[in-house]
Image (tube, rainbow, N blue to C red; front, side, top):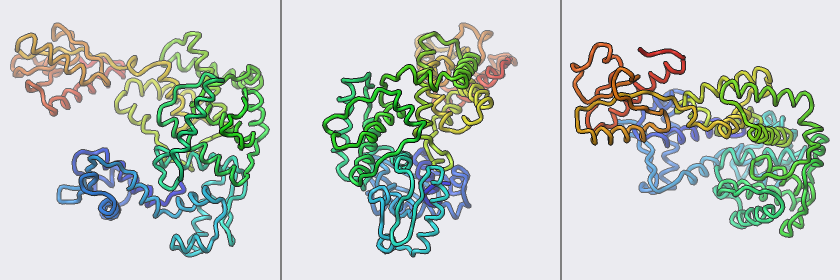
Length: 489
């Protein structure tokens, strides 16, 4: 369940799927890819998207073709921002939350007139929204006014996650005013904190994240909305070094400044000193000690032994996740559309690493069932990648390459294959076919024995895209055997 209309979510999924393709796809194939509806239903949604594209883009920027070959999205110099903006502007759930973020209280009659819905339709939607957001400890009320009742802190967290899950960058939210000023303010805050803490060099995306946080906080400051922390959150704040506010945020309340420091820490925008008694009071309790020990034990069983420095790094990362879980827990039922593609891409592109990680996370989450959500899985994957990079888990496959051509041609071909498959396999070229797992040849099959033919891929010289696909299939087959710990002979 999510706050957007089901139709909007499916259209966004259709756009994302089409944007990944370079060849036309039929409505039936598209319906299967997005796991939704019948071909006529999906085709109807595509036609609605096409209408929006034609009204907002010229064909040189973006074009959506629907013909006898299938459906194809052609994106040249344009991006998809205007397309998403138009889809969201038609979505009742998005419009309600947007208006609540901006105004906190809305005139019910005026909202219905502006959006073209009846009050009964609005109330039905609010009932669904309240069922979704109840885990965030606030409620959307509706009488003469539409408003928020409950925790301002949790509504701000919800608003932040809601917007970042839909808009990749703060500057792409078309209804936010003075975006450039907030981006500049974010850079000023980074400069201020750099003088007090070890502050990371932020990339553009992270600056955008901090700018959105500043924007949401300023909206609350203007309306004098005060944050109230739980006793558990207060105990964490007491153990973190809170410095004075910068002059540019002098009008902010102390709690808003504290929350910004916590937020920048949780979202890995900053590293600042944490008092040792935070570990003593919370993180190094017997329960947490056992968790840390289990994490290390299971990691070392599936990946590699950790040095003392790596254990310190792990301790800091687990502390960050712990603090984020206390302050900014992501409810997967509310935000199922958060982008977790890196997990799925890992399985497809790096099966060796994926198998190790799945074994690690499966054993850890079996011991600690509360971890069995995608948000923890992604965070732990990031830690694993920092401790054991992808290149260490790429399968080594022995290859014999034979073309019957001059040696320099063979050398060039081998280097090209190494480069092409460098992100998927480590190709080790052998001097003879007996030692090889896979034989790649441009010479007719008659020159090979029956045993060799089982391992041989016949290609053209120079090899074409089809040849590379055939080689990839053979390497994948061998890699599967390696993962199972067997032999392909």
